[in-house]
Length: 454
Image (tube, rainbow, N blue to C red; front, side):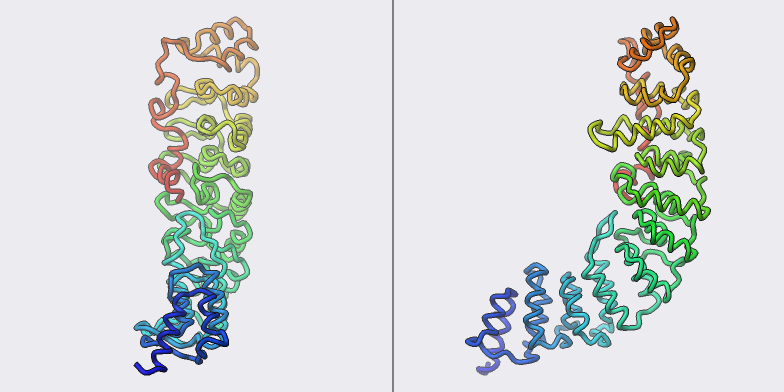
């Protein structure tokens, strides 16, 4: 090895330490003089080494890149794949470096496989961002892709992928730009990250609770009732369930706005699960008070599922499983009160239980109050008198005697008598087959709750 080759080797080896200090030591007046475009045996410059390494954080890599760009050509292609510094930054997940390098790179070049910088950047997105529910916030990566898209001529397929990412990143302006190059209504997700493969854009926007993007996609003619996923859900159902599932997330204001836009545009509210649950029942099961309020104008609150349960019964059963110290519980109580005022309270499930029966059996006084608050005194008296004698004999006797206030207090604090079995008072799996939230979409609902996916 000649002295010059030895010096180049030592310099490259030192720079692979990928610290700002190591680079500054080489660039110092006492260090070896750097040479523009100097490469090692594999064609790597110091810059491409910095982008190719996975041994440090993005912030360190970006600082290195800003120092090395002064004497390293970012367009030199290294290694067997013949990839430049930008492509290597994409490959190794250095998104801020990719954003920094994109404007400084000749984007017309392709690697040894004919892949452009945009193709490599899109493939890197699929390889690195797997959120399984919520989209990953990757603004630097997305900004790099946007720059490249605007500086080159992406294919229609690439524009479709970029449109999908624009929805996930809640970037309406870039989505509008993509809409001039591809048909948004025909796009289906091709990556199984925050959207499922085959899922349409409108489903993604509604389930993320993005009202402005949802309204834009409706305006662009995206199908309102297109079904996708294991539940064969529509965008309306996506707005109710969201990305975390009925049990895994709380309602966001945007979801109700998306749902209202979909209803106003004519979305079908008659969708049902395999077990006959309506959109209103799903909202009632998931503490979606704003969505439920909007759905009351489109769904019949007295409709019953295959187990005879109304939306109110779903809401009552859901309240039982919520921690009573959290805001979600108080919201669910409000929802029970709203539904109780709009529902036929004499309706019975296939097990013969009314919503009040279920509330009393759950032994939650405030829940009982919400149901009774929508009833006339005579109806309360009749309901308490009709309670199973084996379960609440004292409350039933007091009600029959006309002592309504005392009967109500007895019911609010009642515990079943010793002769009643748990199956007599339980409205969970032992009696009704499953709790309402688990039945939100049959077996599909179980997947929604556990995996947070539609």
